[in-house]
Amino acid sequence: MKKSIKYKWLTAFFILILFSGCEGIYENGRELAADTLPHIQQITIKELNAKIENSEDFFLIDIRQPREFEKSNIPYSTSIPRGLLEFRIGDKTFWEEEQWHAPKKDDEIIIYCKKGHRGIIAAKTLMELGYSNVKNLKGGIGAWDPDFDTGNEASEEGGCGG
Image (cartoon, helix red, strand yellow):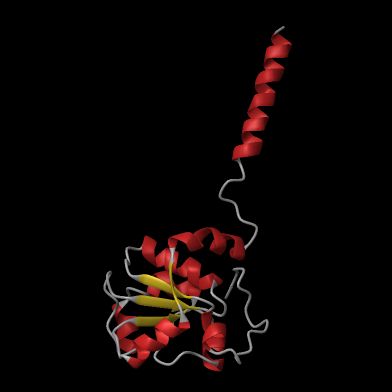
């Protein structure tokens, strides 16, 4: 009888672990971005172009790697690679070197990457740091410039530069 009870408890325990242990674990960055997307505001190319044409005040941050930024970028954007974003966004010295002021917590910040996946995750990170007006450029630089080669320069799945 005791073996039977012990077996039932052990089975219940393993079933509980089996069904609850994988929640919040992602196979790659795209899965994480897809799960994060409903919590992020996105901006279209048309909306971004209107902001640029109207000379609106906002921060446009390219979170791709420096070699990607050098190859092509959206005018008026600042390069802050994804791996440094959390450290540079509020760094007054960095912004002084960029000849700009550090964003305030309620300033509009538009993030972009190659296709949009890294931007979604970066936007969420900035929101977690207290920035309240953060948007991701839907489709990234590839949507802004359809002729842009979105080849395999950097993976959107994470890692160094991902």
